[in-house]
Image (cartoon, rainbow, N blue to C red; front, side, top):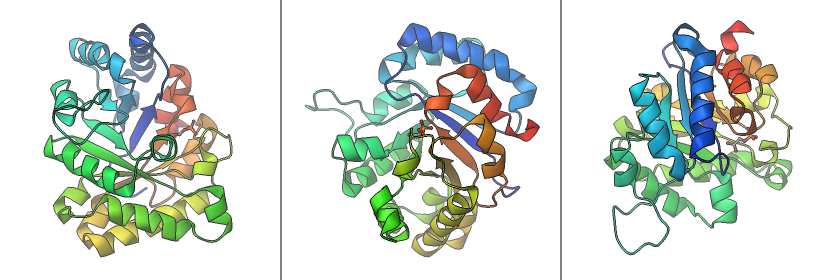
Length: 259
Ligand code: PGA
């Protein structure tokens, strides 16, 4: 990981934990991390929408360094969109990071690259930071199409953005075959794709944006594999699903420097 980019480790809780459980988990995480151990690492948690207000209040009242994130949002500010949550609503809850285009949203809820691009713009318009997800299926990897799939997703996701906006983003490379399967990409394969993503951004935005953008790896990240992943020059952090649900495990991931 390059020195000038601050590592960012994000916990994607998916559809787990009600607001009572979320409060307990964040309290425990805060206790496990302590302020010193978290130093130099941005830690974000992404609970379900129904937990956000409770977690926001906790983080603020206890002045925690843990940063609040969301897992998705719609691109319109308000209107007749039953069941959707707007970026304005999330910004009002002091949400700082929003995961967008997660493969589960793309595969199970029909999100297209164009929708993801609209969401990226809407989140930026509300001074929040998108965590833009990309990644290939196993079939695509085996067919030698992993790079081109990611290329398409990144270029479409970032279409119409200024280079200065791209510089502030987080990109999460999550090979779909590694999500929730216990099958992590090797650190070399993850590094190769993250370097490829940086070169796409240099081409699509600017060299400065490519040097500044933070790239996470996601897919079965655990305390036992984080240190090796974080040693890779183009991997700046991790998007963690299953292992972020258990505060002890997630804290051990955040404290990767101690491994
Ligand atoms: P996992 O999920 O860590 O459980 O593989 C990662 C993700 O989907 O963001």
